[in-house]
Image 1 (tube, rainbow, N blue to C red):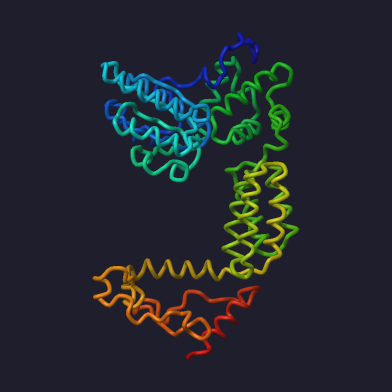
Image 2: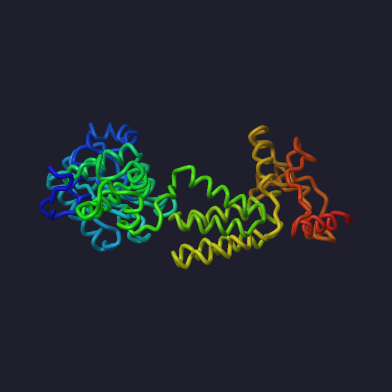
Length: 429
């Protein structure tokens, strides 16, 4: 038999045809299945779930398997296409279905983070009353995207990117379905590049595999990395977000900015972007660097970095690269200080060591009569009553009096800050 054998055109995408129907076939989330085991064995105990994980890690598949296992009526919704009215009508139907003895309803909402607050509020009475079991899927942090009331009624399950072993297993399943020999389709280097390219996303793997299968008849096999770059329309597949090259390049980039070398920094930025690095990841690293390495030597650095992150998220590639270049060169040329970062580390170490020391009585809140009777707030000196806007007073707990955490440098604006503090505290009433 030839390596490639034309299959009858499928009426469904490969990713849908190979979607696991049983937990035994669900790949790459063994720890999650252990957490869900009690609910699998006793479906009536299944709580509302929020499945949080990257694209293609199995959120929808897991929801369908749980619904099938529970015997519940399964309703699949997408948050983008669902309004508050539809959610309310669905909840009412589930309520009456349950009253009539027709069993439980399981509602799966994909991209649940796209529901606005009002739409999320509509879900609350139905989930609280148990009219239906909610399973929401999101790629965004639920703590930021979902309201606290909905989160309190749900259990968050964190799914992870699929490991290489699971991706390889899915790759072989896909090849079998497409009548391809998995050991001859791709060279060793191309196979490694392909698994890196899909970045833990099973759906992306199978969709890309369909593209490869369409070209496998007209190209010599095995396919090489340059074939993949052409077929999948990627300029380079050598930059792996999980390999040493990824970590080495971002490390060189950060160290170049910290070392005030804008030429090296812009080179490594261009190299990461050419390799397909996530521009938001780069922008976030620059925000961290602005506080950690530039700090108060140039307080505007953080504003520039945050503005760059917002621009990247607003504009997107390829134009976002211009904003990243601006932030990179600004921070590279800015004066540097890690005084704030080092002060934080020293203070954290002290808190870890000394625990919860008593706050001086003069600094405590005197909002209640009991607090006032206990002397809270007495002896506090209002700083603005001082000639220079300062009055001598001990603020640290007694055990830490005289302890120094923050040491200003002579770099950039920090020199001005230190001079101002010296002036302000040098004039006493």
